[in-house]
Length: 191
Image (cartoon, one colour):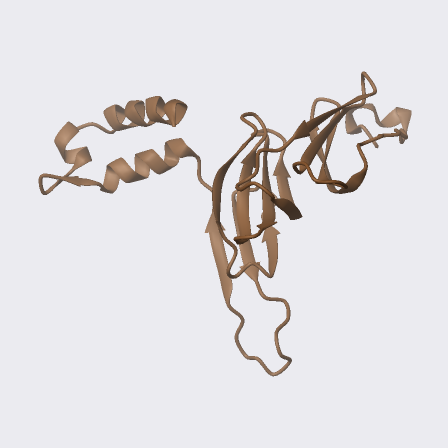
């Protein structure tokens, strides 16, 4: 690991001893923290291991995934600020693309991964592009699915801005965008 704020110290080597299993997708996670995501060897839930390089200790956190019996297939990106990860999960019902929230230890959003052969996330973690990388050489077009990740607050503001009540948009009923923004702030904490 190289701490860019303390470059003069050079690279540091750490030994992380997770529980037996297959771990992948190592990301910076917080102040002097690294996170690993993976599947345990014998049953159990997929796990997140947070390693604190200052205290030199690991914390294993079983992940509450979308369904019971879920295994992680891949982790495409992680947002250390919002404590979220974009996952691909597999279980007996199918393959799901999920946004997992580490702060609440739960999946915030999941949908069947019908197009997700390959996924690339933006560097800002605000959108992702899904595509099939097994295209025939003679193909002239490639189907791309672009998804934008939005916060609950932005979703509620958009919903209230465009929602219609008694043949009027909510913004016209209340008259001010500030009222809708305040309502969105309140709802984003509840849901």
